Each structure stands twice: as C-alpha cells, then as structure tokens.
Image (cartoon, rainbow, N blue to C red; front, side):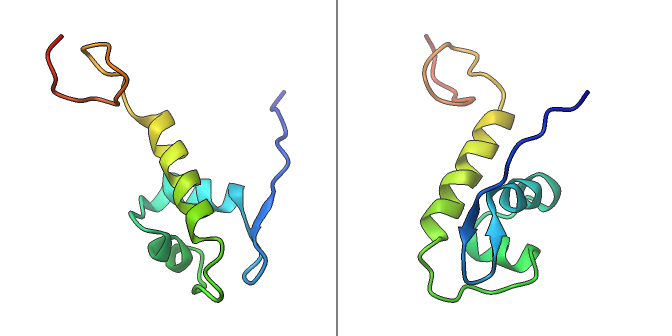
Length: 81
C-alpha cells in the first residue's frame, strides 16, 4: 500500500504544488526556481513563491544527497575529520 501525501499549492498564479516542484527536481534536475517554472510549462508571475520553490528544491536535493563521509553536518563535503 502506497502512502498518500496531500499537496500544498505554493504558487497561486500558476497553481503549482509542492509535489509538482519535487517531481520536477527529481525528473529534470533544474538548478533555479526559474528553471522549475520552465519544467512545469509556466513562467513566474508575481515571484512570491520563488523562495518557497528554492527551499523545496534544497530539501529535495538534500534528501537525495549522500551522507557526508566525515560525519560533519554538510552533504558530501571533502573536509577531513
């Protein structure tokens, strides 16, 4: 049985949900909020959601990043312990 997660609209102008952003990040690997809009076939309107899109991107990429080999708080740095 698959868990169902409710989506939250984060962009009212384009009706983009947090799930839409996560899907775009996992499928197309955009690097900016502007690229996410493009992946989703729209463009920024008022821009109020850009910070939220960036935060969701960072969370999604952080969850997918390998653990740091040295045990520090970063994701995959080259620092030595």
